[in-house]
Length: 194
Image (cartoon, rainbow, N blue to C red; front, side, top):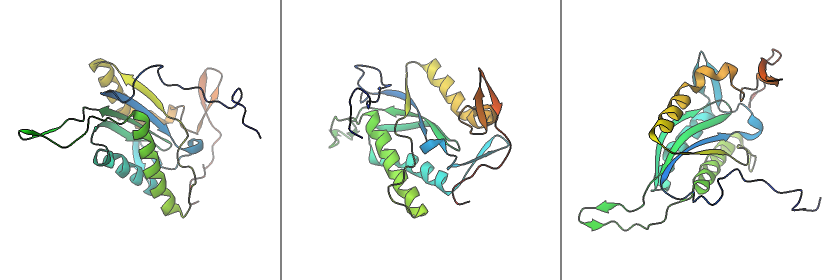
């Protein structure tokens, strides 16, 4: 199939003319490939991570080691998506009386997400014995956190997400029917390794 820019373009969900490398707080949702439940399961309102979920948790926690302009906040891994709050902060750090040898460059949000997806995919695929197999959806959802009230509401949403999994639209056991959600037909859902 020949590339046609009229048909084959992705509409950006990013805020037009916004500098996503500027200091600020951002809420992210990153979904697994085909929204498959590959990261664990929710049992009695608590997320139980499998090996892949533990890798994702480790890679996320290590981001500040690779990007000095990043501070992590609330974070939850769900069976088929991740919610997080990430802060991009100023890169100028002072060490004693002299400026530390750092640059003023801040990494854009897209670079942070790319790094997270790349590192975690590589590790997950190493365990699966696969190479280049998608772990994550191509895009991600972001929301610029504008004030303290917004920040606190999102933190609460993240913390409480596992307790609401049974009715979550991202839960593959739920299918959209009309305006509401209806449980999918009963039956076991295939997980990796089964």
